[in-house]
Image (cartoon, rainbow, N blue to C red; front, side):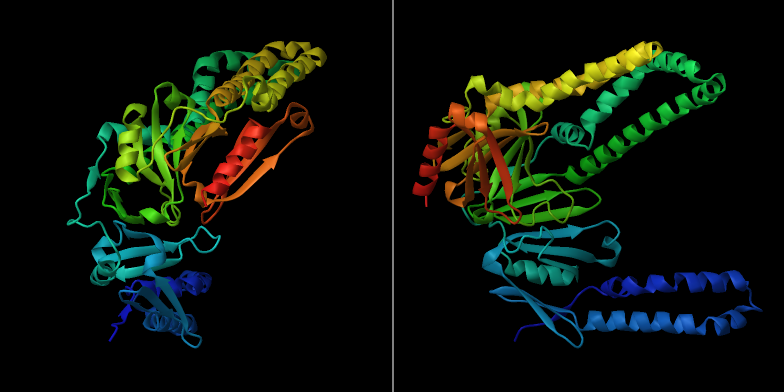
Length: 482
């Protein structure tokens, strides 16, 4: 007989909260109209009895939803039954699960509540296939049914990065890190120049206006700096807390990842369900030969706002040691099929056009308003910086992009935005291969290759300026792998 378990009683509030907010305004009006002292308490309750009744009814329906929401697990599947009048049964076949996540937020620990996620490759929605709020006693029963890292198997591996690497990883991957450095430099290094130029330019427009704006400029500038730095600092602290205690261990079938300080998370990832490995680098990381290893696996990193990190930071020297130990893949420096160096224009044309367009635009301003020369010059210099940086990224991508087949895997090297990607996957997991040619590419017998690897949300990997014959040869090798 299969035992049925209820979700955690806190779920009653979750089921009720969807509608209870509608009564906030009537209650506030009631509180405002009557002073809540001993003499008027009865009068207040009498006047608000209908609102209180509705609240009780909403809570009652929340309780009914919770009562009829049950969970069961056996050796074959994890089942969730829900619904009062119309019953729904969600059956998660264990052998088809890609990843399982157990999350213990600090605010749920006093209630001994745990959030459980389970995901498969089905569907195109990156949201979790199953999400339950369970008691700790129930989660132990369910996790006993889900395969985990075996202590008996001979092949085991454990990796725990040093706190310095976690610190550096949090800094490099906090949102707007490069933007913060640039904008902060803009104001700190050019602040006095900018203020002086803006002051002189505004004086031309209106003396009264200039007095008003000049007195307001410094606080605005400082507000922007403080806001951006605070945003980055918050993101940095969140990443640092999120990946503190990061550790990974595995056997031949399962990868188990633990991370987090305030919110502790455990991920069980089925190796066979990993879609591909995605090695990330920005230009600074590329110069210092360090990288972050991510994976694409349904459920890992999708519902918890975590990056799908396999190894937070690793040097190129030790990369293959980590990859071969965990997922049996290898990183290759050589490129079998790569763009010709004469194809540099395809990698930088947009950045060059933007860069070249900035100077004429600012020159046009100074032509019609000569007194704005210094302001236009300052804006030109600061606007050209990211444009030139983008050109450098494009040229670096030209020399680092390519396609390689090595030991049963296909490796794709390319740049997307300001990030360099090295994608490693089994060729048979490629679901779509597209060759596109522009008019000029037809003349020079080149093409752009779009490769889609099977995943919950397919992502296209674009390699530009590949010789057409090489692209067809790559396609032929992929076909032979099936």
